[in-house]
Amino acid sequence: MVRILDIRETVVPIRSELRNAYIDFSQMTVSVVALITDAVRDGTRVVGYGFNSNGRYAPSGLLRDRFIPRLLAADERALLDADEDNFDPHQAWNVMMRNEKPGGHGERSVAVGVLDMALWDAVAKISERPLFRLLADRYRAGVIEDKVFVYAAGGYYYPQQTPAALTEEIRGYLDRGYSVVKIKIGGATLEEDLRRIESVLAILKSPQQLAVDANGRFDLNTALVYARALRPYGLRWLEEAGDPLDFELQAALADSYPGPMATGENLFSVQDARNLIRYAKLRADRDILQFDCALSYGLVEYLRTLEVLRQYGWSAASCIPHGGHQLSLNIAAGLGLGGNESYPGIFQPFGGFADGLAVEDSFVRLPDIPGIGFEAKADLYQVMSALAT
Image 1 (cartoon, rainbow, N blue to C red):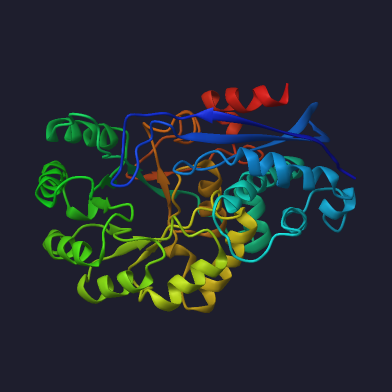
Image 2 (image 1 turned 90 degrees about the vertical axis):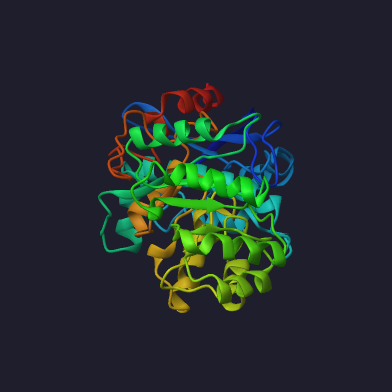
């Protein structure tokens, strides 16, 4: 029988001068946890690590006051699988959510997602398998995507940034092997945003290589104005034009914008995902769903969300998660998602994947090491491992 010996949490800053249409990142923080177990593999104690995606502040208070104490106080067997030789993240999820009322899917979902990530990391390490292989074996009859589509998310607004600086940034992503990139809109005038788009398109071979993201900035009228202006470009997708819970706005946009749209990164529960599919008129043949398990109660909840999507006729291949982290990369390979976001140059040390992982035409292959693979990203593992010493 395996046991949790301790769970430790720290807050790490990821401050930056960049901004999107809604927020700047000058005060952004991340919670990092180490879930220390009594299991030993290859002479090393198994520690599961987790953190929350960028864009939401460290949920430190929730972790320390509610969710970590519940796991540590639980009956040991309540956290285990049927054989009692590994943890069961589904059982642990139930323990964490005891005495939590339905609804309120805000920062609570972020805190649970951090611990869920650490649990899955520990489970895969105890099983001595990469997480993507464990997931494929459990949920997909062993079928694995041997390479995963990734796109470079950048093009933020910087102080005094010029179109030349933006194109230089995008060239850097192309040089790293990315053929699909994303930039921000909505944080400037429409005219300036169109100049930014055209400056990037000038160095790409196809408009299908460029997606744009408004980060929920627009009201309905502004969204429709942007949609009319963007329609002739034939872009890869238009992302999060309005508030993530404004399904009526999204539905109106679907009636006027024939190109692919993307949304979902700021919906944090299976219930919100279901309502999005029910009421926002999204189109399963072209639109992209960006639910981020690290912000939305973790992989346990993400599995429920994938089942809801299946019931409504959507494929897992329509999901390209937000966040650019290694957990979603493992999920994409193990569960057959359509890809994963990537932050090759920002939000460090959390952005990006394993050191030396080659990107070829916007596809990557995962390292074959136990767990999520944090140990293969030296700067991130240095932060994480300090918690376990």
